[in-house]
Image 1 (cartoon, helix red, strand yellow):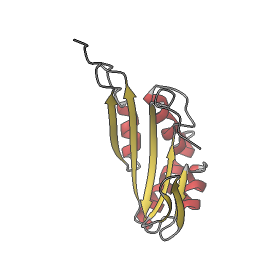
Image 2 (cartoon, rainbow, N blue to C red):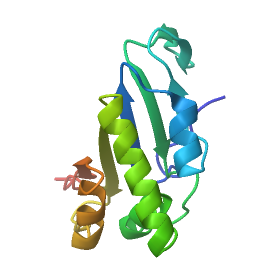
Image 3 (tube, rainbow, N blue to C red):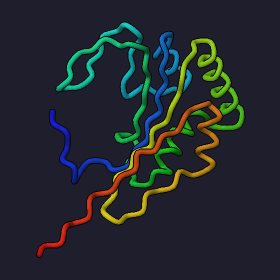
Image 4 (cartoon, rainbow, N blue to C red):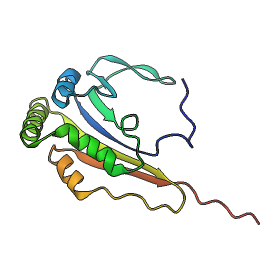
Length: 157
């Protein structure tokens, strides 16, 4: 299987990642009620990719990328998907967040969210909505942004 060419690849997505030596991927999936894009326990063999092959996890990792789940160039919709995993309503919000926080503290897990966006030359990168930042930091999760644009076309002499 080959990756789609750059012109057809999703240019916006977000990834929620939890990691730690005592991470139990099944427990995280049960709390969030969604299977991960990829997950492994510390010491477990996993397929890192076609070129890289099989590796052994140095730490446990569970991550979910939105690129195959949200078909939109709007970063806000990708972040909506992730924040909705943390809550589906007032009571559920409290329960899921509390349960995930308890597991994170008990198992010494870290969380981060990576936001990726690639635009055309001169295009303005998106802003990360403050309400999404607040919700994700309440997990707590670090938020990273990887925003890039194409190089401007060179002028022929």
